[in-house]
Every structure is written in C-alpha cells, then in structure tokens.
Length: 213
Image (cartoon, rainbow, N blue to C red; front, side, top):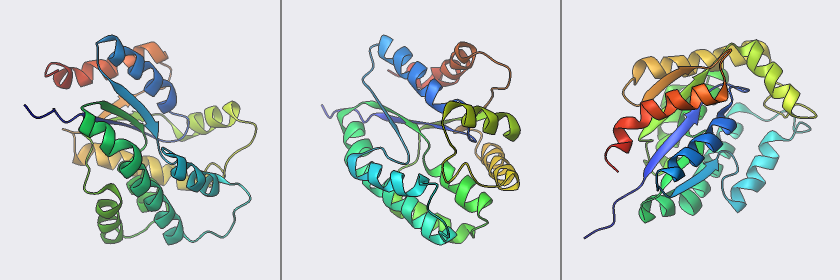
C-alpha cells in the first residue's frame, strides 16, 4: 500500500499577527493527536534558504529592485520546497509553514505593485506547483501588528522598515486572497484575542482535514 501524502498547512498574515506563536501552538496540538509535524518558515526554511533570508531581511540592504526581491524570495522557496517541504510530504508528515506563496502575492504583488502575470509563473516555478491544503490567514490592523513586531526585536528588519502605506496594500492583498479562495484561505481575526483562543479556532477550521487522519 502506497504511503499517504502529507498535508501542507500555511499560516499567513501581516507582520505582527502572531503566525510564529500559532505555528508553535498548532504543531504541539497536532502532535498530541499522534501526527508527525514539520514546523518551518519562509524565508529561511532550509540551510541554504537561511542564507537568502539573511540577505532579504538585512536592514543595511538598500536599493533592492522589487523584481530582484521577488526573485530572491522565489529562490528561497524553490530551495525550501526541495529540501524541506516535499520530503516531509512524501513521508506523510503534516507541514506547518509560516508564510508561503500567499505572502509573495501580498507583499510583492499587492505591496510592491508587481503585475499578476509575472507573479503567477514565478510562483508555480518556485513552488513546483505546490498549493497549500489549507491556509490560516491571521488578520489585524496594520498599526497594531507593526507595534507588536517592533517590540519583539531590537530593531526593524528591511521589510519592517517599509512604509505604512505599503503594509496597508499588503493587508488588502491578503484579504482579497481570502475572498477569492474561501475554501482554502480561512480568515481569523486576532486583534484583542488570546493566543489559546486563536489556536482553538484554527483547530476548528482544520477539523475537516483532521477527521480524515
């Protein structure tokens, strides 16, 4: 009997939405149900990808062209998919990924105003055609998210140094994705809520997938 392919669950949302916290809580909850879970992130989800992450987030890097930024994120993803995600899915593991293709659509497409036709081909190429089985979109107001993000680190990274107008475009891009693909992208409002309450809602949204395991 062929081994069952694993599932790819992605967490998306603007900066400061709590994706990393939720990824950790969800990984723990899924493991308690007997599932093998690989927790990863983009950029930087494999050893080579980590080097690309360091470049992309370097606050001293200035003048990076939006298309060059897109291609660097695509290089990170191609390596990450090949090294981490695809092997885990072949093993039958569940993969929890903090950011994936929807972040490219929101940050480089909506945020940097790059044409959709450019993103579509590059996205398919970089992901090897991989589409998440379910995406949890954590949403909160931009001002709240940026304040959270800046409190948790000593200094803003290159992406966090972008303008508020840029981040508003990013948030609108994410919300458009939820409207266009409600079967896959599940919106979770997180402002003013506990991490445990958010995780409980996320598990409810994943329940149809869990019933099959």
